[in-house]
Image (cartoon, rainbow, N blue to C red):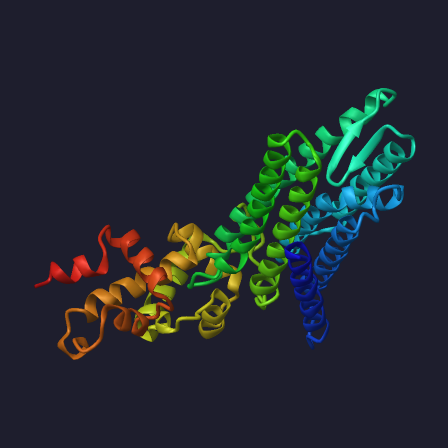
Length: 365
């Protein structure tokens, strides 16, 4: 019964989140990809249900599609990150689509020709199997590794680039995609270990089915709780490799604007706004966002995130010495200075000072 409960949980969450996303009034491309992702998860869980009922064996097309679904998940992860980074996805979609279709065709031929006999998640090769069919599973692993490297790199680059636009720790809204990927990798390793430990017998088949169903249901929950719950209304984050070639700013202009920027931050204390973004600051100063970004990255040699949080740290250090703020806790004072979380405050403060806020306060008295 446990296996059916796991499947019911995953299917229910998938269906529920699909309905919520479809009812969303203003949907973006990323929302449509999430809808497709949940739909694929729904089909995948349905495939496992048929597997538990022994309705898959003998159906060559169903076996081919079912064997190819895992790689489709990781492809959707990669495409989703591309959309968040405002990168073109059509070339990548064509490549991924072609690879997926090739896997379906390969597994269908292998099953129909009798090259393989499948028991649950296990493939048994016949003695008459063509040589090329032995290359299909290793190529599956190779695609996983290459796409996985691309995913992790893209998440890292995007998290770094977000610091050019936001003064608060918004990259946590994206890092969950990495958690999803690693849960997929760890789940796969566990499944392989289970099957190897019991010599591919029927118990291994059933256990592997249960484990993979549990992993997929967990990932559906992760997608629903973290992915679909985020608005992802991020402004476009240009890659750091951009050289601002079209800005037209001369060195003298940069110096004047840099002084203007520093004076504005000192006088307006805009950094006290916990949700300050580059676009907000540019609007307040009446300057194009790309010019502010260029000044911070090229003239000040830092990111928008680090610059604003440095001002917040300095404001905290000033206020912690003043009697009128003595009634506030360290966290209360940090929130008053523009930080929006305890973890973010402690991390930033230690980065800029080398000590914790409590150590800094003790050193004053």
